[in-house]
Image 1: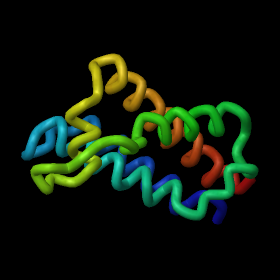
Image 2: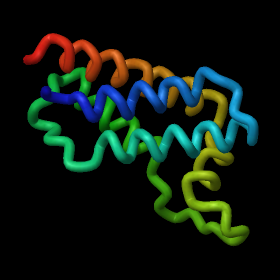
Image 3: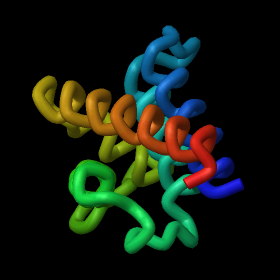
Length: 111
């Protein structure tokens, strides 16, 4: 069942962004980053079409923690989530929604 794991993880990430998180927006985004990271782990990007590859590249860019420091011990994804601009949050949401749908369609179509 191709992409079943990715379909699950990106669906989880999408849900995390849609529902209020008891610890706030930053925690919600950081949790979504974690789910996306799991979904991207061991993913063969050559199996994706051009649209999905562009979304994955954008997601990796938005999740990149290079140059950030975690002086409070919150975790780098929390630090990154807190640093996102409103525009980046909209982009992140769109990319996660797009990838969740893409993986879901390709999981159910058995391509």
